[in-house]
Amino acid sequence: ITVVTWNVGTAMPPNDVTSLLHLNTGETNNVDMIAIGLQEVNSKINKRLKDALFTDQWSELFMDVLSPFHFILVSTVRMQGVILLVFAKYYHLPFLQDIQTDCTRTGLGGYWGNKGGVSIRLSVFGHMVCFLNCHLPAHLEKAEQRKEDFATILHMQQFEGPVANGILDHDLVFWFGDLNFRIESLDICFVKYAIDSNVLSQLWEKDQLNIAKSTWPVLRGFQEGPLNFPPTFKFDVGTNKYDSSAKKRKPAWTDRILWKIKPPSKGWGAGGHRPSQGVLSVSQLCYCSHMEYTVSDHKPVAAIFAVQFASKVDKPQVEIYVADEWSRPEQAVVRYKMAVGFHRSSWDWIGLYRVGFRHPKDYVSYVWARSDDGERCLEKQLFSEEALPKGNGEYILGYYSNTSSSIAGVTEPFQISLPRSEEGSSSTDSSGSSSEEDDSTLVLLAPKSRSPSPGKMKRHRSRSPSLAKFQGLILRPSSRDRGTSRSPSPQSRRSLPRNIPTIHLPQEELGHHRVKGKELGQAAETPEGSSFYQTVQEQGGLWHVSADSPLARADPRNLGLLPALRLEMIDQALGRQREGADQGYYPCQKMSPTSPPGCGTSPKEGRNS
Image (cartoon, rainbow, N blue to C red; front, side):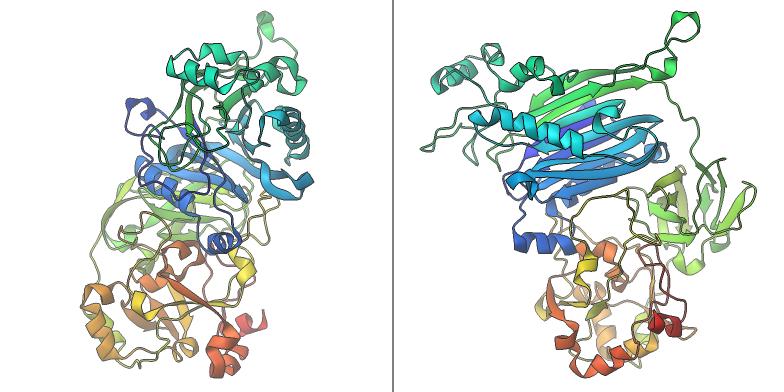
């Protein structure tokens, strides 16, 4: 397990974080999980509004960097500028269950989230593990306040379920962040002399956290590796020089990573030995800072741990069986079997993922895993030909459990080799279209939930704003930016993913946003046009936008990939179309794992919802 903490000081992400994550060394060849804790991510009002519509730039960067190494975002939680992300190798996902998040504000007496703690807890092969990222009060004289705030966080954060309700009830706790402990007594000249002379051990006994570990009962049992790296605060931004401003703050190890193993329960097994399943050991393989990053006045800190325990889970909750290759549409069959005791839901689904996917909602296509309740026999689902990606590539199937909000089963990578659709159909199938100024307007009536759950999942208590709070917005690319990716991610220059699920729009809606067949054909022949216009076909009273079409990227889960947008209220932008909208031109025609369960299967049902 790799743990990283970094106070980024509201800075923009750097271009490369591979060395921070130790991806360019042999140390991470066997890493299974990565936890990243950030503090002071830009959380000004205008930035939070943008992050409500798009994934924040830091999270985008880490997903972009880690996905090629087969790390998938398991969970994330944000409280203003404090963010925690947990990644894991895709083949471990079925064994990571009971995922919950929580956050505690301690700034301004508990009313402001600039200080406090965010946590993600989960069961790892049957063992309860909690990651806690904290930003505690600053300044040398606030040591007691840091103690009180940490105690408050431990007391306030409670999780649901029969086991590990409190943070310290978990088998293993990782506590990290900008803990803001300082060096007492010693003056700044001696501290800098010790750093320059590489005699850091002379500073350890005056470190407030080292003192607190032996005197504060709340820290009893927490362990930390030796501080063999220079203090990580405070630097002049853009340099490796300690604070040269008028304040001349004394260097300190503010950024720390600790861990605690739950004491073994009382009771002895046969032969006078404790049960083997309760044995859990942790060894720290690396504990270091990264001086090469200069965007903040803090240096990031990373630690790598080897965690050893006996697995309590032998098989995934859902076993999926699939052929080695799909070369014809009729081969796109998935069979799966559920374990006894697995809590299935009618909102469970099976996602088709391209190898290198970033998170559980980053699917290419999906089918609902609905079936009659009965014996846990082998069940079968078929992907439609329209939902399958064309061309050659490696893919993975994953069973998403809505009850646990996690992937309960995955397959090994397999090959899909399907012929691509014929070219030139774009202009033919859309020859009857007419052009309007608002031809690229996407009207998004945001659902109340981003998951197929009948309601919000109570287990996730992150209070970051969601898209649902901005219902009724029109997201429209400005004309000069059409056809160009404007993702806030620093990796926005890379090509957009092509395999996004299909969306369906009713004829009435498209009637207001026609595109001239001639202009559509010309646009499809140019690099700029081809990025926005693709095949549109009429099927059974619906206009079907192919899975390869960037129009399909209107899925809210992919909003981070939309071009630069103007935000307008529907009443202002639609004008004469308001009457048509009131008559129900926006029914939910096709269910998707990002659609609310209230959407019907017909325009009539959509209008009545």
